[in-house]
Length: 268
Ligand SMILES: [Zn+2]
Image (cartoon, rainbow, N blue to C red; front, side, top):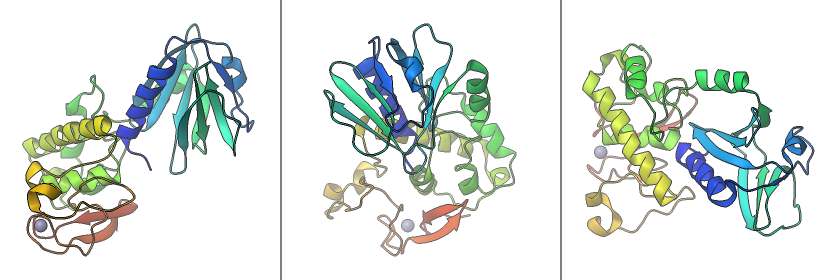
């Protein structure tokens, strides 16, 4: 599932291509009932909260709400290519076409519905208006493991499975540490680190989490080869040697997703 940095990147791309433009809107597949209502409207802005993308239009109270889920994909193409496969939403102007395929949600929501979506979401580290205390206070009073809390979108919105594993490694925290067992400065350090890591992921277009001294060049090691790209400490590195201490990286299912950690560098 794409993490928050990807959704924020999409909002940027939509704004770069379409902000202020009159657009054509349709649902070639027919499953986005509101698509035709937007045809000819002027796109106002795309904005992201966690893994939820919202697109607003001039003079319209309703917005498009998109959640890509695991299978959703967005593709931008110059010009007007023929429709291929199941396109839920096609948005285009003279220069560019955006096709949304396979999303969990792609729907028009009114202001009340939008508010109820946002009410369920914790602060998003990539939003300038995020309130870090909303995260730290939730964490510090929870008896759930920090690895579970980081996957809970009502605690923190947008940090997914890769960032969860990597931030816990960078902070030297055992994934099973309970929220109540953390010191306030540790909870804040997790937040601050995620702000930095996710901003790097947004600008770089991939998730890199290793410190300069652990880059391939600095360590004289080959770059990582993985579909998910990026230089990481533990994510999908089970059985391989920890870049810092050499211990084999472990994996287990926690919070419904595979978690990866170093039993030596991450202590209770
Ligand atoms: Zn280690």
